[in-house]
Image: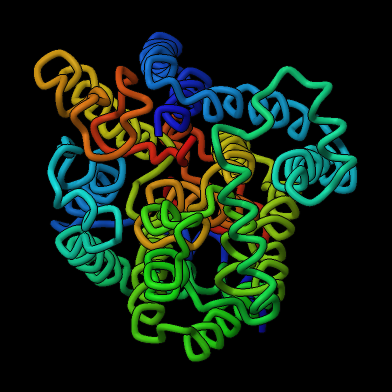
Length: 261
Length: 195
């Protein structure tokens, strides 16, 4: 969550309170470093750079390539390394822990479990801690009983709601939000808010490579992703009320209304 | 008629603005949602407590009841404007996903567990959708975010100073002893895989 706070601080700074924003971002960043969460720390920078590039890309296709291309590549290099010789060969050339702190073992286990039900999955949020895992574990996989997720949102989705489920999540949470950002209403408040939601959306998608939280109950990162996706939708359709312009109301686009926040 | 056709610019602008004695309550509920997620109801988890395993397995009844209550309250406060919220989110992609999720609940290896968790997931999504509408504008939204984030940050730093055994991973913890010494925020446990 500290990574999310870094972006909130950046948003606060951009909306007219640079001192407060800088303080929030700095405090969150220092705490993030002290947690030792290398993946979250790395993704703060990766998602930050991609946010910057997506916001400046003109066409929807360029935005899609910049936003989602690296996501596919990172998934290939991480989860893909479990099954692909090419991914392992590429990974060996990079200065990273090729097991991703033990995640490859979990991914291997999860990919095996996916083979049992690739289309309908094991059931919504019904794999980890399930009786099948708890009582079906052999000695070599006994440690899996204590694992709560597959540490990759996309693997977890296929595991629980199958390949069609992953495709539908892709439509609703990857394709639609990007299109919505492309259609953000051209007011200052809409643009500022949409930029925050874009950063949170991208961070969630990229952090999802190492943690599983998409559609996951009351997981704080799931709320952050949902807020970003809904926020991008709203800022593409409704004009955000900007209290800074109370004296001189901005003209409203014909098909837009004002949405608070 | 599309959802956009239902909206008539300035007339609708007046309609969506929260007014009356309930107006302050909108902000209070929005802040409560942010705090419930950013800080949680049990910010300092004792990882040496055997009960922590229950927490991690999703048996956080109090949290779920609180979120559900906040969702109901948000719905009541936004009554009359819900068509704007739902109208924007009533997309083909969302309907397809929802329909498929119901299929995976019915065909689940543990249907009752899946059904319960789908309700919780949907509640969280509803809270996220309602949150922007509970604020009065960009400035108000930003102020609430600042309040929630600063609260979480202060609690996290204070926790590390005052109750380090609850906010810094310990060798005596029942889980994640391999990252003993690493800080953990007041609200979220970073679950690491076995090495």
